Length: 109
Image (cartoon, rainbow, N blue to C red):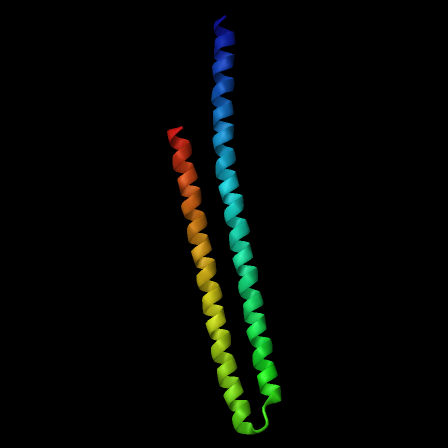
């Protein structure tokens, strides 16, 4: 009789641990997905800025306009890179926060 009770108690503890681990894994997977999405979106934005800068350079009529297009294009590309890096850092921070929240929730359940 005591073996059956021990087995049932072990199974119940194992089930709750498995469920809590599932929520942590879900938070981790969501975090990875969001960070990856932010990286891809940032890369697309930087590529678009580079294309626009190249177009402006090739459409320039004289040397002064070409130099101006190079300066403005470099500035816009740097700005897009900074924005993309900032968004990735923010997504990573949010993912870590969410994972910690799930771990804390699991510890108390």
